[in-house]
Image (tube, rainbow, N blue to C red; front, top):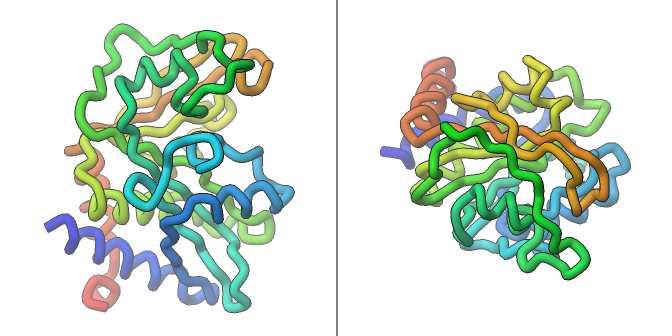
Length: 231
């Protein structure tokens, strides 16, 4: 069932991209994603959570999607991984959400401020991030479809119980960007000195349980024209 749902979202997204001469590519090696963002000059750094040099992500636990133009250049991307190293709150507090193993210089507790009513996030936790759109392709509305098609690939590959993302306060306070991620709830998760950057940071956690994740994917598929779904 989830394979059919995923294929519907993938086919529909491909049809949406086609008028711009764009296509989707799926890659299992996240080092390609890290290299792309490190060299593009317009990304807000490289999230180490998805970088194989800093985190245990590989073909069995992560992937990334590239939106590629007719010339073969990547104009947008998004990454996804599965967290299997412990409770999410503990991964945040220890910094292992970003670096695993944590380098000695960064072994200072991260000021985790998840609210008391936050879930325990038991089961398989999916984590989406690293969404980037090249400046000359911004304004096309790519972030929303790219996030959803990335999730569509994720639910086909992994038994995702929770879908999550961590982003800076500036994103959490931007209704358009929050809407693109389509999480059920967004809450503060880090407030204070963040060892990886050496700065005071405010991060938010967006999350959705499985039923909400699948419901949003079904809604996305339902919005696809009949010709797209049948493609």
